[in-house]
Image: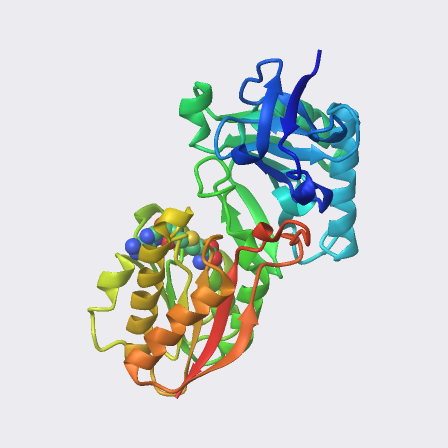
Amino acid sequence: MSIKIFLKPGKEKSLNRFHLWVFSGAIQYKEGNPEDGDVVEVLTSDKKFIARGHYQNGSIMVRILTFKDEPINIEFWVRRLTEAVALRKAIGLLGDKNTNVFRVFHGEGDHCPGLVIDNYNNTLVVQTHSIGMLRQVGEIAEALKKVWGKSLVGIFTKGDQTLKQKENTGDLKKVLFGEVGETGVMENGHKFKVDILEGQKTGFFIDQRDNRFLLEKYSKGKNVMNLFGYTGGFSVYALGGGASEVHTIDVSAKAVEQANANIALNNYKGKHEGITADAFEFFKQLPLDYDIMVLDPPAFAKHQGALANAREAYRRLNKLAFDTIKPGGIIFTFSCSQVITKDIFRTAVFSAAAQSGRTVRILHQLTQPADHPVNLFHPETEYLKGLVLYVE
Ligand code: SAH
């Protein structure tokens, strides 16, 4: 017997508009004792089928997978993945000679909460953010083999660390197919080595591809600071664009080591130095002499409760940049916290600029690339915000 979740009267409205989360407050009663990760049916108060999704006790209780009355099986995943691949083909990423690293599946942006899949030169990394997805990863891998076909090299899965306590899964990392290790990839013609097994997220910050490309255009002859540089994504592009000198700063010594290796791999002319340091401390090493600064911190706010502190951290960081950048300098500043909206971020940057007394103009307003599509019905899918600023 299938497990059923009945909504309170009127609470089907957001689902009628294809939003993908059912909050605990919307639920009237449950039939059949659901456990975390179960596939459940969602019904209106007058008992009409409305959607099917993954149950998980918490503030988001059901993550919707489909609004059709269809089973969630390998065929379902084949259809979903085929649609996702079609989008990547439509935007020209699949088969691009210069780029073989991109996101294949972007959670709610591809209509399935909790599932992220990234492609690293035909090694696919499946990251699960819900218990339902974690449990289904075997079926998803089978479907991926069918959809990706002969060029598939390997499939690796990484569960979100927060799932570990809940599900008692032991190791969340597993090779599901083929051989998986350090992988060489190409992005817009630049070469990178990606540590899929141990790296952050699925190994690389794929969502900054278009923004790194823009930095490349501005870098000729410049001194560039890449703060929170991780494995040197922005740094490689800056040197490729002819920067005279680039500094990659990250608190992780391992990331800095990998950044150095990525720079060496590309063999561009300008100078590079990798520096292991805390970003806020680094600003104390005055005088700083940068024409361009890239500020790409980790999400300062991971949930609503952390919003006020995060806003303050963005203000403080950007103030340090405004206080020290050369006249006529350019700042690329980002926030990847989903709860920090475009307006909140812009206000934090505005406060920082006002306090520093510099005259600042916005050159570009940046966001995530097309392989991280925003689901119009689920605005929470829009998370990456960036401003490119000209500082007089
Ligand atoms: N710009 C990078 C991604 C940055 S991710 C890219 O394009 O690939 C954020 C990075 O900030 C991580 O590598 C993390 O190690 C680093 N980090 C976190 N806190 C930090 C701090 N206080 N000072 C410096 N780096 C920090």
